[in-house]
Image (cartoon, rainbow, N blue to C red; front, side, top):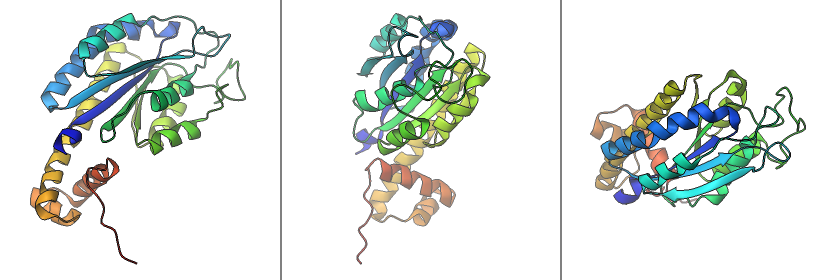
Length: 258
């Protein structure tokens, strides 16, 4: 049970059209080292997957490409180093395709904490952006509402990092509808720092969840108030931890008799 609690599946969904060259170059230098340091310090079982997305024909040669989860961070670094920026005709990109591909085509572990970090500088199709070759909506048929519903059903939290002000509205909505956070940064170094801070926050919650799970097994009762008193934390902190554990099926809610 505790081994499963420590599992973190992290997917990066990244725009690799031409305008993203500076971020990809910076990611090659910093991203995997940062993840390795965080994983070791937090004592977690981290798996990293990557989805790169571009756009639909005739705007790009590929719509998206999926790189499976791996616990080998050296292999993940090789994947990041292999990413090449190219294409990009109109301004909006296949953002929604990238998210759906991550949800459907990556092999998420049953009880893992599931995180998706969206990184891009252009909005999805169909949200009113100027010069949209598909103003009626993405050719994939998905919408912000439909992709976030899929993520919610799969218990995936979307955090979004916007590298231009043009994505603020759409990326904020994509993250908010799944309980995630949105960050905006037009500096590559700051963008990497935002990702690090976000992951530190998520990993800190894992430590609290470990403590709550331990006390839950001692008390054998699903009582947020009692757990809060045991750990000397506010009631809402204990309650939120229980919700996270329940959502991951690490504890079972009692069946109430009619």
